[in-house]
Length: 130
Image (cartoon, one colour):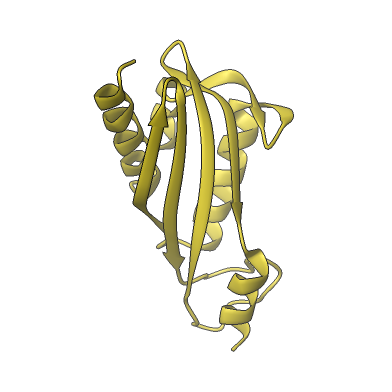
């Protein structure tokens, strides 16, 4: 994929996450991947995404920066939401959170093959407990 194609690909991926359109994830994620350096499957990733969306129904990912280098993507996102269920170990209180996420991907044959992401879960917990 060229850089404009990867930008469109990633924009469509984030739009699908925000729409909770998990049925289209096979167009974005290989059956077998590495997630944070460990072997995983698309179903493993979908389980996490569905769990997060279930706990935080209004969870929203906003892309703030995207770097494309060949078949690799580096993304900075702002994640926001108000948990309705326990999230990062904190019972729901009506409090919302905002946290920056950094994610790195490798796209092979038009889908994510390697995925890694980090965010400050302790900062989320502090915001939800305040």
